[in-house]
Structure formats: C-alpha cells, structure tokens
Image 1: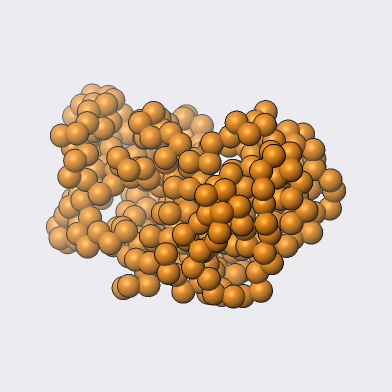
Image 2 (image 1 turned 45 degrees about the vertical axis):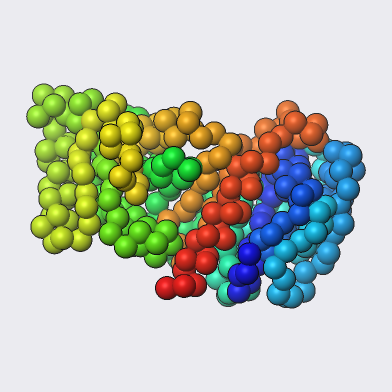
Length: 331
C-alpha cells in the first residue's frame, strides 16, 4: 500500500504482549509501510524467546511500501533496564512514554502517516511516579486539543463514546449539552474526513433504560440529548437517529444503514462490539490532528513470550490507520 510516509507503531508495555504481536504480525510480511518505534535489543530478545526469525532494518527516513517476511523497520529508543517477559518494571515506565513521544512528534511533523499503538499498563506508569491516564488523554495533551472522542470500530459497526472511563454514578452529570455538541462535532467531522462518509448517519443511544420512557425513567433524554439532536436536525447537518433505547439499537434493523453509533458511556456500547468482533476491533482516537489507532486489548502479561498472543487486532489497527491516512490524502 502506497503511503506518503510510513505508519509509526509503538508496541507499548515492554514486558507484555506488545512486542510479541508486532513480531508475529511481521512473519508474513507487511504490504503497509510500518516503522516500529521501540528498543531494537528488546525486539531481538523477544523474537528469540518466541522462536521466530526477525531481521531488523534501521529506519532513517526512507520511503518504502512493504516489508519482507520476518522483517521490521525500526527506530531505536533506549531502554533503561532489562525486560523480563510478564514482569512489570517501574524502571521502564518512562521508556513507554519516550516511544510515544517520538511517534507523536514524527506524525505531527508528517514523517509518519499515522500512529498505531500497542497496549500499555497504566498502573506501572503511575507507580513510577508519572501521572498517566492512558493513551487517549496523553495524545490529547501532546497534540494540544480541547477534546477527543474514543471510538471502536470493527467490520460490523463503529461505536463512539460521549463519556469513557468514569464511574457509572458520575456519567449523568458528565453528559451536558456542550459536551454532547463537542463530541458530535468531532464525530461528524472525522466520519467525513477520515472515513469517507459524506453524509453520516449516526444512531444516538439514550442514557436511561428505554431511552427514559418519556421521562418516567429519567429526564436526561428530554432535557439534554433530544434538544441537542433536534438543533442539529434543524440545521440539516447530519442524519441523527435517537435518542434510541440501547437494548434495541444494536440490531440489524438499525445498524445496517448506520455509519456509527454514539453511546453515552463506556459499557453501554463496547460490550456489544467486543462480543461480536473481539480480535478484529480497533480503538480509534477522533479529534486529533493525526491518525491514531490501537488494539482493543490489554498487555496480557501472562501470555508474553509464550507464543499464544493473537496479533489479529494489531493487524486490523494497522490496516485501518492506513485506510484513514489514504482517505485524508485523497481529500
């Protein structure tokens, strides 16, 4: 696949399965140009533990279209301490962020067409004394944008979220008219620009059971969600359906013609998508000036260096990042 510049790929937590799935993905060769931003010695060590061949090629800004089987282009990042697969080490927490910084800076400068991230372990980064809420918030801060939107996509559906990692008791208060407008603006813009949906059709879930049932099960739909949706409809900006009961929204009747679903909170939309598409789902950050995709799973420390990790989600994340980058280029 011909991109103006390769994608940057950060494997994430070095003691988890991030390095494994990168090496496994490379075994059949890559028809998408990818540069792995990571420590070269770590990649070689993990390949040896997995019993897989690996040829590393140092990237120095070259343009290339593909990689041969068992070959990876890399950009080396120093690793402070040795890595034992499956064992977290606070001494390597900064390394994870260093890899991200190199990749973000390169994507922002146009040296990379986008960024694909492997799984990180937020706990060990925070235990090292570094405040870190996760990839999404880190990218938001580094790119200097006011708000980003988390969306997971699979071959079956796209699900974006109004709120993400909040306790359920805090969700209602977090859903304001302003926040909902910000999220919708980002979702609409990126569906048009990064996913080639010129007239997006979005299904919007209600917050409460049965979408509030006319106010008998909550008034958020009446007081917040519906007024915002109606304002967009009057402007003729987008086809918004809702607020719809979440328990019936995720059915073929609605999904077949939809470009995306907007769920009010994390566990309203993502369990459905992951049940249907786990291993094929891709985590996407909307609202950034760069393309960013990620795997839909965690570090799986118990699987590191065992050969049992599945690289399917990473392959999907790379493919989707390339498609988004091409769509942007063609605008």
